[in-house]
Image 1 (cartoon, rainbow, N blue to C red):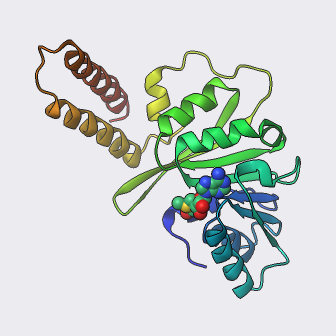
Image 2: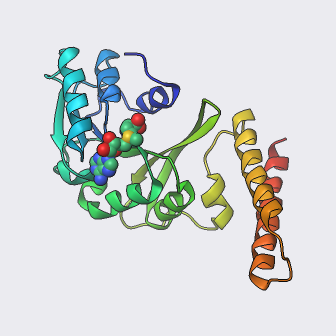
Length: 232
Ligand SMILES: C[S@@+](CC[C@H](N)C(=O)[O-])C[C@H]1O[C@@H](n2cnc3c(N)ncnc32)[C@H](O)[C@@H]1O
């Protein structure tokens, strides 16, 4: 099974021999890759929709891997019992949906050793939720594919203690554990370009609301620019 760069990166963040759950598996590619590459032989793959689940059932059957990959229909973490999975993947969904799925099944989250999350949108909102709700960020990785930069966040829930102090709003947006490399610079520059683009569309600076928005964009550009210059 040849995976896309994004899926391959996610799969390779799994600890060898972990019991894995792939929530929202769709095609079932990650589970097949994990077994074929001897990373895990115990996987639960789920999807809330019958059609994608059927795709996964067919692919698992065609690779003759039914012994290692169990397929379940259902939403989010409700398909899992406590302690069934060490590492849980939730990839390719919006950050708000991922946050809601975690919040809905705290008992499953608490018992997992780690969760590998790959939000397609609302990355900032998801990171804010994680940091403010006792998740430890174990690893953050960027991966570029077809001109798009994806964020992958590996976390662990740590019940009682407050893990982070002094995290600013801008850290929710820019991450806290990314490697400070060329791709990270590109990621930050893209954010600056997005704010410049918003600014260029704002006219009527006499309007108080628009003026505020313009100033907020400037503030973000300064803060992200500061992060960029620290690593240039
Ligand atoms: C865009 S696909 C991503 C597939 C794969 N995880 C990936 O990263 O390429 C999103 C999948 O999540 C499933 N999904 C959406 N909401 C879900 C939920 N609440 N619980 C489980 N699966 C869900 C969809 O049916 C779809 O198959």
